[in-house]
Image (cartoon, rainbow, N blue to C red; front, side):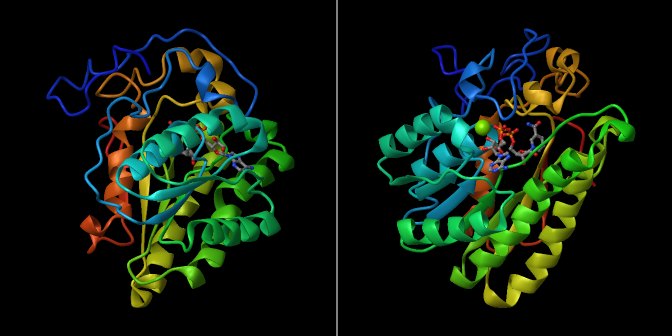
Length: 302
Ligand code: NAD
Ligand code: MG
C-alpha cells in the first residue's frame, strides 16, 4: 500500500477499516516470491513510520529483511537510528534493493548480505560479516522463515520437512550460537514465532511444529543469556498480508479470504508489527525477556 491512500498509523481510527479487507484478488507466485508483486501491496510503514531515536547507534542484523515483516522491521529500525544489515535469498534482490534504499533514506547504513540460511557455514559467515560491516552486533532479529501448506501428512516430503526445519529452527540455532559471543550486555535477540505455535492448523503440520519449537528455544535461551545481560524474546504474529501466503503458504482460495475469520476481519499489515519488534529490541523493554508477544487481530495467544 505504498500509495497516497496509505493510512496514517498514528491517527486514531477504527482498526477494522484501517487497512484492506478480504476478499483479495486471487494471486500466486513461486517461492520465495516478491513483495513488489503483491496486490494490494502490503504496508511496511514506508510512508508513515516515525522514529524517536529508540535505537540510536545500534547495530542490527535482520533475516528475511527484504520483504513483509522483516522489511517493516528494517524500515522502523533505521528510522529509530540503527544501522541495519539484512539477509535474504539472492532471488529476492529486487525487494532487497528497495529496503537498502529506504534504510539509506533514513540516514543510516545498510548492508545487504544475501545467502541461504539452510547452510550452517553460511549462517556462521553471515554473523561474522554482519558484525564486521556494522562494527559490532547489538540486535539479531530472526524473521526469515519457510511455510508450505499441505493437506495431509502424506503429502509432506522429507525434503520439505527438512527444509522447513532447517530454515525456521536450525538457522535460528546456528545464528544465535554464532551471535551470542559477539554481543555486549544490553544486546537483544528477537525471534519470530506465530499464532501457529499455539493454535496449529492441520495444513501447516511441519511449519506449526517449527513455530512451537521457536517458542521453547526463545524461553530457554532467554534464561541462559540472562546472566550475560542479553535479552531474548519472540513476536507471535497472526495472519499478516505478506508474500509468504501466495507462494504456497496457504491454498490460493484461502489467500482470497485471508484474515476474514478474525475478530478484526482482515489480515494485519507488516507496519502494524514493526513497533513491537522495536520495543523488544530497544532498552524500553529492559525487564522483558523470555516472552512471546502476540499480535493476532483478536485470536489471543496463551
Ligand atoms: P516473507 O516471505 O516476506 O518473509 C520470509 C523471508 O524468509 C523471505 O523474504 C526470505 O528472505 C526468507 N527466507 C526463506 N527461506 C530462506 C532461506 N533458505 N535462506 C534465507 N532466507 C530465507 O513473509 P513474512 O510473512 O514477512 O515472514 C516473515 C516471518 O514471519 C516468517 O518467519 C514467518 O513464519 C513469520 N510469520 C508470518 C505470518 C504471516 O501471516 N505472514 C504469521 C506468523 C509468522
Ligand atoms: Mg522475501
